[in-house]
Length: 631
Image (cartoon, rainbow, N blue to C red; front, side, top):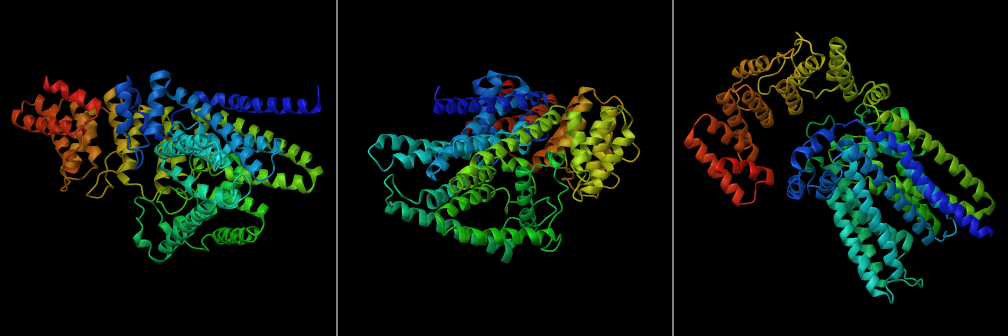
């Protein structure tokens, strides 16, 4: 057997073995728990999807983002019809999708290095792509079911980049039919990515920089394509001017931007904080500290100025230095490749880590941008191998060692994520000042009957979260008492510290309490006691909007369970005062006016619902519910 054939077989074996290794490492996480948004975003999946019609209805009714994210939601609906394995099925599909994305990352790195003139460095893109695949920072993306949205967006963005590189190989040229197919594929996959998650839009400026810095607007013969040069200059100018405009507005007239709602920071403070967070992301990708990894990073110190904390100044200066170095590197072709890798990371974060009033730190935001770091490493190794050929084998050997270390850390993270109790302990150990980690520990202790200890962590969570309403803390105390099967604590549940005007803000907490009461999982606090508590407190409230709209809906469901239909109707009316065109509220009012034999009111509600149905405003499930009253 020739040496070349042996090398190819070894390479092919490694290309097959690495994804299998990743699948084996992630397999324990399949039985992991549902988390946070998994419950709110996917909780209705089993109730809503029974056949193709309900799956379509479920997909079109989603409002996860500005565009609805129908591609991601459709994947969950289709999975429900085909697998129907609940949370385990979600995680299985996510793991398979991660393996596919890993293959696409390797493919993309091979194409980029080949276009940069390093087509012989096959092992470097394979090892760097595998490092991306086995990065422990992505465990919280792959095993957090709802983050399939980020994974699908990444999948389609990778397809866009790969297709574009092939398009530039074939066009302009004689194979125009192939170029046309690739162009159609780029448009379709871009739209699919956009409807999977909106931040897929960042692939457009990345394409501009790919053309300017790597492809240089040249055809297969090395000649400049005039119209492509003009288009790239326009795109680059729009990118630079747009960035300068956003920065100018942020620092000169921030009131022009949407103010953060229920966030403990201004947009300027968020932008300053992100300068530190982005460096931390890079550190967690290159040299992971798994003790700090997880879902909860709400304990991250806010930057309130360049010197508070002082690390903000160093982070800003470091980014400025990187900018100056990039300007110098632009003078050389090899330097432009490295600038593209850095820009890949920064542009990938340009939506979620800049001026939008989102939470400060989430690991899943690195799923696509992190490719930029591994591309940069691959380029540096390839450059070193070309200048000093003898250094490439040992560098690749060290790269393989790094991949092994990443896989070991990923394995430990997956083991933690496979068990809800380990996950909660790990979150609290890594983030003792996180309000959410303390809330998780409160739930953990309450489930074992340790109410006093649970209330201690609940109080600490309240102290750590300056925006939490005291009524939410009281509601949580009642939920913890239910979980511990102990009577209502003296210090909570009465909303004594709640100011007039609003009893509580957290509707999910109220829904959790009422759901437990209705299901009979709260023997220590009867449903009648909860009902009486709210009745007595609401009588003192002069404002008809003492609760969020969905809070009134939850109370209406409780009173329906107790067969207090008049009170349930009153709560429903309060709900409709805030959401007059809510189909859910109108259907509830139809139910209660029917039970109370109120024909005039019933007819008015029925007519409004029929009008909304004729306008196509009712979902399939809502139409089916309405049909029960029209027969």
